[in-house]
Amino acid sequence: MGTGRMHAGEADIDDDLVRRLLVAQFPHWAGLPIEPVDSAGTDNALYRLGDDMVVRLPRILGATSQVARDHEWLPWLAPLLPLAIPVPLALGRPAEGYPWPWAVHRWLEGEVAATERLVDPRQAASALGEFVAALQQIDSADAPEWARVASRGRPLATRDAEARSAIAALGGTFDRGELTAAWEEALRVPEWEGRAVWFHGDLHTTNLLACDGRLSAVIDFGCLGAGDPACDLMPAWIYLSADTRDAFRAALTVDDATWARGRGWALSVGLIALPYYEMTNPVFAGVARHAIDEALADRRG
Figure 1 (cartoon, rainbow, N blue to C red):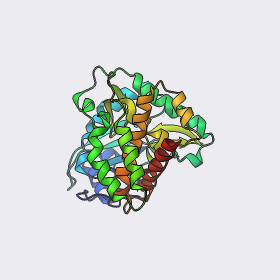
Figure 2: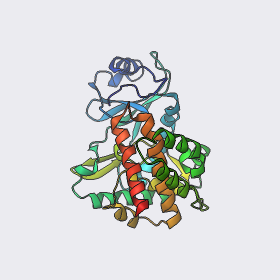
Figure 3: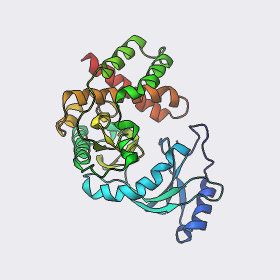
């Protein structure tokens, strides 16, 4: 998707802006080649810097809080996880007409881990399950307030209005009655009453990287938080399929209610994202459609 606009209120970002920011704030990197990264990511514009770095600039105000959080928390999480995650190198400040903080990260090799590119999709499903399990096992006692109030750790009911609005918008594409029944079934699942656990919150195709056909890294921690672990079960439907879903679950310790809430999360993300991105981000719209299709098919049994 490059740096094309997907939201109202996006900042104007291009190669020249990135160069000017580097010259002003990190002149030791200013002479390196800069190349836009073709990404379906929705909240940040990415520019490869030299061979081993990437400049990451929020597109919208709502993504700006992630910059400082990544800088503080990702280096702490990285050694505790079995897959690579981004390593922030430097924090940039607003300047040159760009209104928000930005960052330089270490470049992670790999390509988007689309399932058709994987050597062994079941092994990848297990590896992703092991990543989620490891994240859940990290002590969350000192998780900051922003993590504990992160939206994807809250009950599914907090998404009810948005989900129903999306169901109405998608009535000509899917069976509105089936969507409503599936969503209301998810809302009836008991809420999480356990301890808050760390979650990534956005584990879908474009946030997973593979090297040589094997899952290698997890990126974009913009939804990072601590709460109900159900949102990190979303990849079972938003990324995987019936052929690999069991391998993902086998790597986790998860009760049936949390699994059912995870399916509800996948459904809600698909519902809300599809009408929003259908005309501006076909890759993410495809991810959303897959989530809806898989959640409905799994419910049918």
